[in-house]
Image 1 (tube, rainbow, N blue to C red):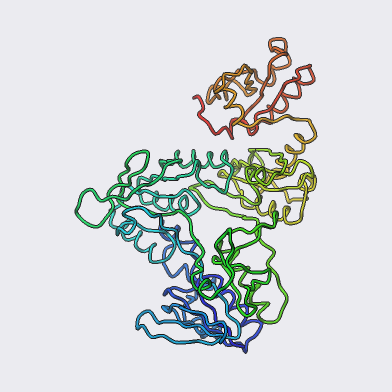
Image 2 (image 1 turned 60 degrees about the vertical axis):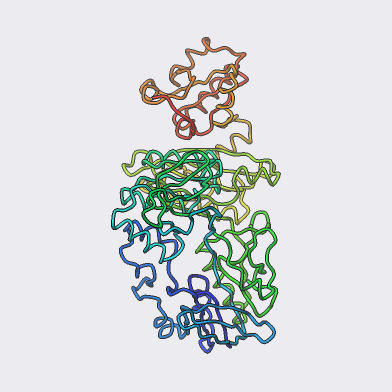
Length: 561
C-alpha cells in the first residue's frame, strides 16, 4: 500500500507512525514545505522565553532523538521530502505534483491513499506595515528565531501584541521574561473570546497586575515607521491612539490552509472554511483523508461544525485516519474545545459551552461562579482557583466549565470534559468519587462544589446574582443593600463599592437594623458566608435576598482599598 502524506508537522507524522505500526509493509512518503518536521508548535512561546533551552528540544522524542528526515527513515521506514511544496492533486490518476523549493525541480508522486495535513496559516490583517522586518507571527520556528534574535540584542523595549487570543496571551509572558514593556491590542470587547467576559476580565486584571497594558475594543489601523532609519515599525496607530513599538507580534488567529484541497475540488465547510471530513477523517474522495488544523470538526455537544485548531486534536485525528487507511474502523467523534494555557502564574482553562454560547443556542442556562482553594485550605501549597460552571436548567446536564487562577485548573477541566462527554448532570458531577488528600485537593473538590452551588440555585435554596447585574444596579442608582458579611479586618483591606459591613457572626443580632422591604445582596470573600447570611435573612422573613456570585474574589470591577 502506497500512502502519500502532505504535511509533516503534527497530524501528518502521527498518521505515518500509526500506519507503520499497523502495516509495516506500507510505503509512506511525507511531503513537507518547511524544513522542520514534527515540531511542537505549542512550545514556541516557551522557547522564546528561554524556558525551553534549545530549538532541537521542540523536535525531540521523549528519548531525546531529533525527529528529522533521517530519523523517520531509519526508525519509522518513512520517506520524508521536506523543503518540498505540494502543488496539485490529480484525483483521477491518484497522484500529487510537487516542487523542490531549493532547485525548482517538479515531480509527480502516486498514491493509493492520500492524507492532506496542510495545517493552518496565521491570519495577517490587511493594514499598512505588516511586512516590516520587526513584525512577526509566532507560528513557526523561523518566527521564533527572529523574535529571539531581536530580544537577544535588547532591541525590543516596547512590544505590541495585536490579538488577545491564546497565542497573544502566551506570547506576553515570553516577552515579559526579557523585560519588555508589553501592550495587547484586541479589537473585541474582551481578550480570550473562548471565555465568558467575567472570567476573561479576571485574566485581564492579572495581566495588568504584571505590568501588561491591555487595550480591548481597540483596532490597530497601521504599523508605521516614523524615524525613517530602516524598514522597521516604530509605532502602532490604533483608533484609540498611538503606541511605540520596537517589535510587533501579530496574533489574530489562524485560517485553515485549504488551497491544495480547494484546487482539487474537495468539499470545504461553508461556515468554517476548513476541509469537510466524515468521522473516519475521509474527505468527499474516499481515497483522500484530511487531518489536523486544515479540517473542520464537530462540536460534541451541539453537533455543529466548528474550527478548533489544537495539537491534541491533530494527533488524535491522525491516529483515526491511519487506522481506517489500514482497514480498521475507528472514528473521531468531535471536540468540546477543551483548552488550557498559562498566563504568568495563572492557569486559564475551559471546556464545553460558555454561558453566552449556550444562551445563543437557546439553552435555559443555570450558572455558578465559585472560587476556592485547589487543595485543603490549611496546606501551604494551596492556591486560589476561580471556576464557572454552566448547565442546562431543564435537564441539569453539564454544558461547560471555565477556570482561572494560580490553582490547579487543568485537572478540573479534564474531569469536566469527561463528564460532558458522558452526558452527566449536575447531580452526577456533585457525586463523583474523586480522589482526596490534603496536598492534592479539598475534601469537596472545586468542581463538586461548583456543581452543588448550581444545584442550590436550581432547587431554590439560593438566589444568585452576577457581578454584572449588581454593577448595572449601581450604575442605574437602584436602592438596595449590598451586605458584606466578612470580618472587619477583611473589610479594611479591600471593599466593594457601596457596601455595608455586618459580619456574619453579628448578623442575627442586627436583623432589626435591616429593612425588610429592600432587596439585600449578600457577599463575602467567596460568597460561602454570603450564602449562609442569605439563609439567616430568609429564615427571619426577608423575602428579597440574593447572593453575589463568586464574592469579592470574582468581582471583575474596581475595588476600594
